[in-house]
Length: 182
View 1 (cartoon, rainbow, N blue to C red):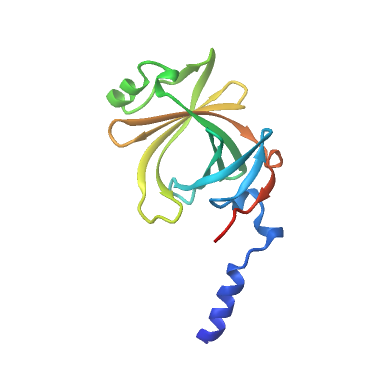
View 2: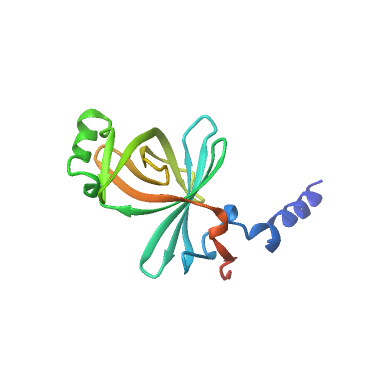
């Protein structure tokens, strides 16, 4: 019985370029084209928000530039691309307001555009291959057109991150290639 299990595992571990070179199966070391640039997948994260809601995020690097591609399937498939920004860029007092009131303001302004609080959730973040999670709280703000968003994350008592992004479609990513393996 164990002998047959060995062959089943070996079959599962084999790379299938027709099925494994899709956006939702990116791995660290893969390459892909997006927005007229070639990007390398440098990190992978899993976010668990409870009640079965999980999202996956990949850090993509092209030269000195980094973006974060996120996939979620909460009743419908959603893809986003975000870039980190300084928390002060969305308001000088946002950090202070969260620390004093446990919530941010209902709306933020970034680059002369207003964003409205859409949802918030506590969660746990796992880096690819890690069993230990980091807890955080996430607030998401969207613009009137529901095309762009700002996310604020609180990690611990006073550590904050902010990012701005847009909703994207899977077809915008092309030429997915595996990295060189040793």
